[in-house]
Image 1 (cartoon, rainbow, N blue to C red):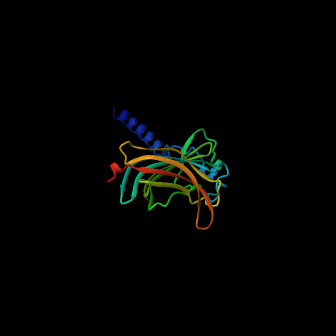
Image 2 (image 1 turned 180 degrees about the vertical axis):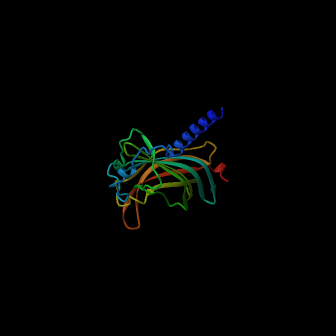
Image 3 (image 1 turned 90 degrees about the vertical axis):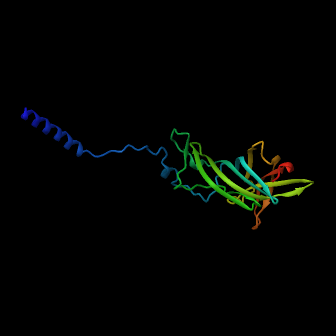
Length: 214
């Protein structure tokens, strides 16, 4: 019997020794997009040549009006096309790593007192469409027009001031029914910068409901 236990002990030790010599392999998900290849000749300082329209969607979830200033918390979605970012993988949409830098319009709100980006993420499709999602806090001054308080959200770009053909298109704008915000109107106009360059910006004129002002 002791001879049998000795054989078993030697067999088990041999198995353990064999497996201890094996390298430990940790399975990790492979990067589906080789960003080194995609960004090889990419210059983020150059504006995309595909389309100079930035499509914007805004959904407001908090609005306050006080002392002629409108304070907004909202989510904004921006879309544009940059064919330099196309990739061949079957994955239709991927998250852009924080280590990779691409051209962005550097969207800002004209005449704002405060414009803060709280959260942001960028997605890229295999066709080169860029989808940028942001959560922002905005404070803008309001003015009285014909017994009506209006607040203008002018949407412009810091990256394309020298390109008058560059423009913003507001495709969606919404807020809760209990908001202090009333009707709104979307228009476009030419904006002139301090250095003389012109840019076409989008303007959302918001009406403040007097009976709900606080």
